[in-house]
Length: 483
Ligand SMILES: NC(=O)C1=CN([C@@H]2O[C@H](COP(=O)(O)OP(=O)(O)OC[C@H]3O[C@@H](n4cnc5c(N)ncnc54)[C@H](O)[C@@H]3O)[C@@H](O)[C@H]2O)[C@@H](O)CC1
Ligand SMILES: [K+]
Image (cartoon, rainbow, N blue to C red; front, side, top):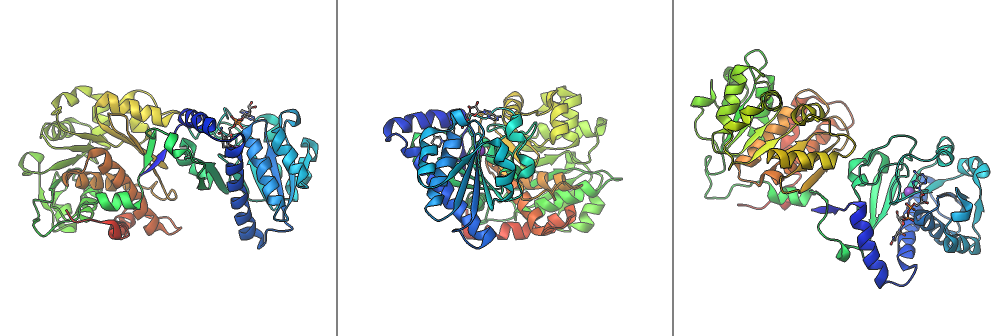
């Protein structure tokens, strides 16, 4: 698992580290990392480092200081470096002096258009951790002149460091180099950050528990259930799917299919689409109603069940069954419009809710807003449930405050039926006995990976994503461990 820390957490840790290190040492480490990345980008984009031109955009704080020191290091490699000082009086004095000593130039805003147009690479040191709000007018006026790739120092200026939101002019980086630890912006707004590179400045020992965690391939591979020699179809967990209707069987076919492909445990389907499900997935035991479905170790409920009386009865049955439940789509809407349906819930059993932004608003009475992390944490506490908030970055909060982020690899998953696949994956992992928070996070991981494998740069249907689920799981096989 990789950690992500809020700017408050980072600042406190930095203070502790600063007190233990010689003055200026941290900035030198950070800036050296910026220079290494800049040289790498120059090589990739121009084929050389020496005799290239780099323009530094330098704001009033230490972020600008990092850029100035990086300019000094680049000068040593024969790069022509020009710093545009947005606030000449407040520019980091030691950094500016070092750049000038090394033969770099500093100019004011009026010369910025010319030096930006001549640049092979732009380094964004306008604002860092202290950034609040969009770029101010002077900095914003420069955006139009940036044609070269941009390397952002710590974060792309103008993007909120903790929320990843943009509400005005902001930098779009090709690559972002950050120091000590990743910050929320790096997972909440990956489009603006580009590739994120972490430079170690010795901060990790000073940091406490991360505010957000991110699963990597190893975590998901290790968590994914692999049957052992003693296992049979029941011991691995039976997933129950209560989804779909006779007129709209698609949701049932998709949710059931992703549960079938996710693990080797058995899948039961219960609902009016039993015939269609059976013909598409002959390995599934399909019945017409949840009341005669038989024993399952987890239920997926919601996709396509409708929001009327019959949907409500299905939801109540499942919530009181004494096994973990993943509630999606119509189940979420039912909970929003008829909150007393939750009275049926067995309080001892885990519940996973998987709303998109609209369902989240219905469920909680307010849209996720700018602080998505805060909103999803509050919802998890309020419903005593794991809440998975869908989006380009999917967030998964547990009632105890843990938050996972899963960054999509592209936006092809924004297609009809995609959510049905996700709930099937969550259900299969719940039935296998995974911790519900981890189940939701691992499902989101494989879901976005399958979409990426299926899409390969072109639009993809939910059926296409479904077919790629085995490939996604296969890509994790070197990390899998038998139960
Ligand atoms: N504290 C440390 O130990 C280290 C800090 N480092 C760097 O220091 C940065 C933080 O430095 P600072 O605390 O000086 O803060 P910043 O450099 O983020 O910004 C401070 C200045 O930016 C201005 N500003 C705020 N919002 C703005 C906006 N929207 N548009 C334009 N200007 C705006 C503020 O008025 C203030 O003058 C980090 O992001 C990182 O780059 C690194 O050198 C590593 C070590
Ligand atoms: K920056």
